[in-house]
Image 1 (cartoon, helix red, strand yellow):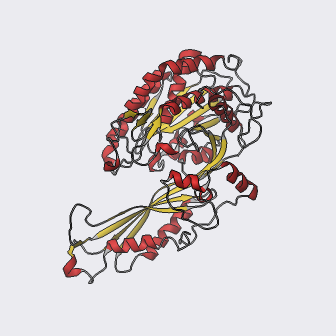
Image 2: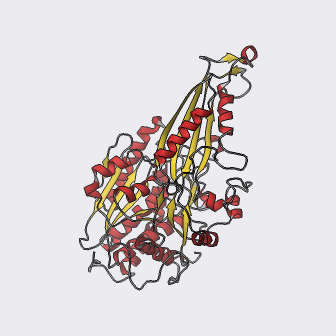
Image 3: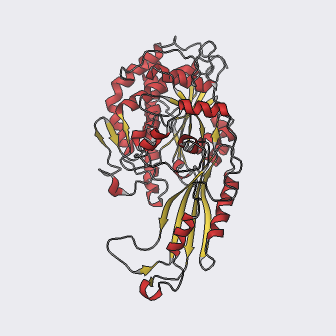
Amino acid sequence: MAPCSQIDPLGAATAAALAHAARAAPRHFEELAEFCRFPSVSAQPARAGDVAACARWLTRRLRRAGLVQARLIETARHPVVFGAWRGRPAAPTVLIYGHYDVQPAEPLREWTRPPFAPHWRNGRLYARGASDDKGQVFAHLCALEALFAAANGPPVNVLCLFEGEEEIGSPDLAAFLASERPSLAADCAVISDTGLPAAHIPAVTYSLRGYLNVEMELAGPSRELHAGVFGGVLRNPLEAACDVAAALHDAQGRIAVPGIYDGVAPVSSAERAAMRLHGPADATLLHDAGDAAPWGEPGFSAYERSTLRPSLSVVGISGGYDGPGVKDAIPPRASLKLDIRLAPGQDPTRIGDAVRDHLLHLAPPDLSAHARVVAQALPYSGARDSPPGRAAARAYARVFGRKPRLLRNGGTVPAAGLFQSRLGLPVVLMGFGTPQDNIHGPNESIAADMFRRAVATSICFLEEIARSPHGRGDRPGASSAPDGRPLRREAPLWRNA
């Protein structure tokens, strides 16, 4: 696909849009706080009305930004916000993806302020979803607003797909992609739902782990029983759940589930060497975790364990009394919640079956046991040197003043694997989260400076894609691979970059 002949010379439209974004930044900060006030927790059924209200707000805001025909599309659970602008017939089309649902905020006592009462402190906005993913979604929206206001629209055709189920594994996204496939024709997808090693170091992500959420319930007596009268007489479901959890790893830190490592894609020694050079050191990751002690599968660095290998984490165990004081009663049931991350190459269905079967094998025969896969997502593995990735690298360089690192990420974005497998789209993962944002934890936040950089990088990325003569972000003559080869260095748009 040829570039659009109507695009201004490099920098002219971008400069106008950047100037507009700078002037509008105070309003954008207020609107981002408003966005974060919605308790759009997709995992909690009682919040379904809040999720829907957030979707309606986002639809209206997308229309005001310039995608005037943006619409809300219902799914089996939570709605998708979709907008399209195809005003550049000769230009490429970019699909911008993000999610407006958020993680549960509990335990609420760990927050210094209520999680859905956003507040600014020391240049950061604190709220659940401020970084993951409302701040990153809203940065793209503000970039589009600036391009419509200052440059007669973006230099490419744009599709926006913002879903409300990412934090529960995107269970309805595949069906949505199938039903709306004709409307989703694009040249590439950009997702901003990943992180940077540090606020001043940009990164293009080329690999994500897959995901399984598995729940198990163990049931014993039909009611609570007096622990003095019946203690030592019958099996305690809560103790049994603890025994199951303790048996899921061996003493060396390997996952003790038969078949859990099946299908893990091999990684060359050259790539592992590049990961050691460009990725975070063990000490850095452990510091970001609050100076935790190292633990895990032998033979791999912490970065390799969190990106190349599967992991299994007990993220919830419940049963019995957990209120103040003492209650001497044996609980009738207990449950486990497991988070399992899959390495590239692994099949979620196959691994899910293996985990469920092993949980049932571990359950004591004198208790009733049930296990089920609640959510799953494919791993994602993209090209380490793709045309959209090179466009992202140039955009990062223009804003941050330095080339991005090329990294794997241990998290999961279900849309990435689905866009690749169902739509055949190259995906560029261009995130703006930092370790200080504390995503999924208490007191999540985003820095105002990083939000401004995200807006600017989005503006620059769309122009870099537009100038491609091949339609998917490639521009011959620009040496811009993000993994250590020469990349033109440009003055950063912020002096403290």
